[in-house]
Image 1 (cartoon, rainbow, N blue to C red):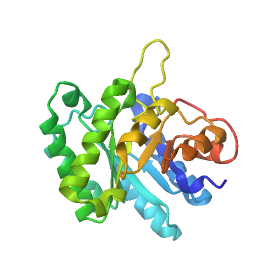
Image 2: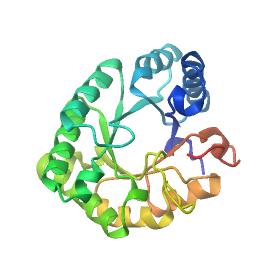
Image 3: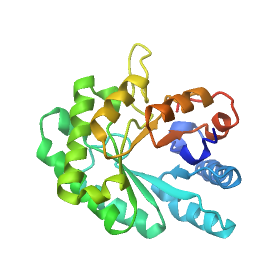
Image 4: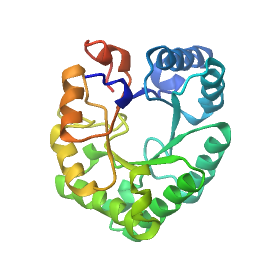
Length: 247
């Protein structure tokens, strides 16, 4: 199977998180973008401050690689109005896809109307600009029951308030890759969490992010029914190797 069309090649570390300088981080982002261009990955996922640079590189190369970025990342607690402002800037800079971190802590507190509002507004902004929206629910922070309920909430908001015809352009995504778990528990997609998401997301597509360590893992996720895979080791996985690092 050619899995490249499923792969969102990802680099989301700040200089502080990676131990690199700002200049070295810029070079790392450029390498990630160029690798996506050279290998024909579906999308490159980078932080908002690098969207304009990525857009220029891809356009100059005449490539059809998409540019994705993250909004409210990684905690998801940023006020939704600020998320919208950051999303609009990313759109203006050339982003094709917006991966919002849903306010899963508000959801866990029972503030479901707030979560519904941000899902509606964030999805609508993306769709009005002919972009793709994805909602990261952070499965490692949720119980199986919460994964099911939050996935269904996002589904219902999109289908009932935006429309069934737009459902394919709003994803539910598993993880940021930055959530800290205890006892060596996985912080990314697992077959169990993805099954729950798939059972509750339809007709919205699902993206598995983190936890896909090799080509075999990727094929299994695709067989389950996911439409995209987020990984910082896209080339290694596509070449049949093992993922390096934690995402």
